Amino acid sequence: MAKTLKRTAAFTALARQLMRGSRGGPSLSKRIAAVPRMLKASATGQYDGGMRLALMAAATAYVVSPIDLIPEAFLLVVGLADDAVMITWLAGTVLAETERFLEWEKQRDRVVVI
Image 1 (tube, rainbow, N blue to C red):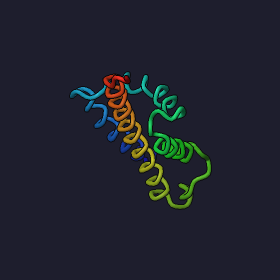
Image 2: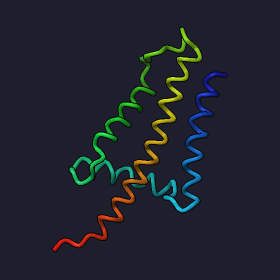
Image 3: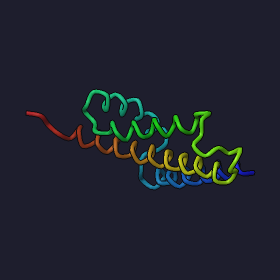
Image 4: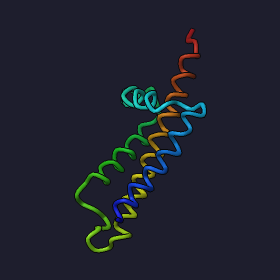
């Protein structure tokens, strides 16, 4: 039951962001395709998303790690709530950062270097 609530909260936040794609924002396929380019541009220092990418990697590691700050076995609702918050934040941050990166790419393509 509690795991269902965690997933429902994460998917609700994700669905809200994805609906923005149908209203003029980048589609999900464009966002997914942008992730490798964003990683490469950050690694080469062209894009300033390094710290945000590091935070997203840390959040992903926290969610998939078997070690939990607030274990579900002892504090069921609170233990699941921290994971739900992390998943929701991660989904929103990935969507926001890919949108920001795609906008950065558009602006970069418009700049003419003389």
